[in-house]
Length: 146
Image (cartoon, rainbow, N blue to C red):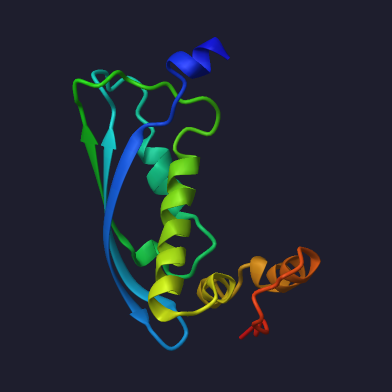
C-alpha cells in the first residue's frame, strides 16, 4: 500500500483523435490517434509499446488500419511505476473512451456501438448479447448481430 500511494501509478496520458464514423450505426471507418505519455523525469519504465499493442489487438474491427502516434514526454513531474499490466489498462481505456464518444455523438446506445464495431470473427459478437441480458441490460435497445 505504501508503494502504491507513493509511486505506484499509471503514466498520465493525453489522447487526441480524429475519427470518421458511419453516423447511422456508429461504425468506426477511420481513426488517427495521437497519444502523449508523461513519463516524468525518468524514462526507465517504458509502457508505450504494450499500450500500442493493446490498442492494435483490441476486439474492434480494422484496428490494424488505425494510425497511431505515441509521444513519450520527459517532464519535471515525479516518475510513476506501474503495477501489473503495464500499458494494457491505458490502451483499453483509450479505445473504450473512443467507443463511448462515438455513442454520444451518434445518440446510439454504447453497447450497440461496441457490437457494431466488433470484428466479424470476434467471439464477443456471440457472447456480448447474452452478457447484456445476464447483466440486466436496461438500455431499451434490442441487440442485433450482423
